[in-house]
Amino acid sequence: MPIAITREVSRSLGDCELSYLDRAAIDVERAIAQHADYCRALESLGCDVIALDAEDAFPDAVFVEDVAIVLDELAVATRPGAPSRRGEVASVAAALGRHRTLRTIEAPATIDGGDVLRIGRTIYVGESARTSTDGVAQLRAITADFGYTVQPVPIRGCLHLKSAVSELADGVVLINPAWVDRAVFAAFDRIEIDPDEPHAANALRIGDGAIYPASFPRTLQRMRGRGIAPTLVDVSELQKAEGAVTCCSLVFAGVLK
Ligand code: CIR
Image (tube, rainbow, N blue to C red; front, side):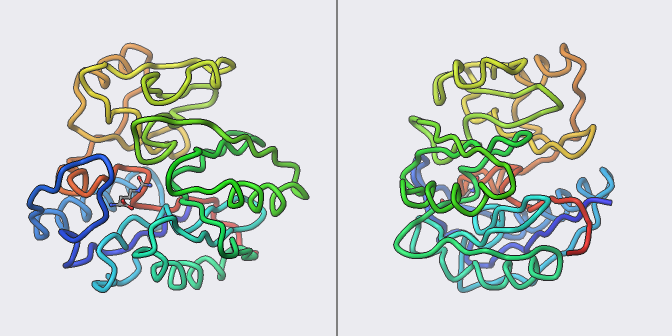
């Protein structure tokens, strides 16, 4: 059974980091309800959800994906690019330490988990403002012994690599070619997002299923046309914080270390 680590929404979510979005008022109660629905969607796809307590001192703490990278063989505690987010790491690392041997990205390097897309033995890493060259190099050194290849990927116009591309199924990626070069993913079957829905490339694959925002009907139609029927969630309040569906959980195979 896969494990999904999540964290309850901070009351301070309205003070989140924003890079490409203008600040809009966030209804925190609604965000909490949407997040609860998201956790139920994880459970409906077979995940054992471990919900960490909210950390109100850190507005973005619900976005646990950014503070760790979990592989079958080990987990890596990141050093997030935004200084306001570095205090989020310790509690997630403590929870992960029960399931994986832990390694750590060391200062001054930075890396956000949202920039990390593992497909098979390749770890694609977005060259975003949050992830430094040194962060990529440290991840490469940590994972090389386990047979992973780390491939840096240029991105433009978006926060993280996984804003621009995510894995939907074996051999299939969902991609916004305006934000990442489609040639990087030429070996995959590609479903391109509808250009009217630029934020639509982030889906959370879980086994044979996927969780996907309800707010991208045109791209959803493209996915359904290719035989992919994701579980839909309304995450509108989390989207105002520049969040998406991958960022609210760390999903990994539930084998004990
Ligand atoms: C941030 O800017 O760090 C948060 N407001 C949003 C993080 C979203 N993370 C993700 O998509 N992996």
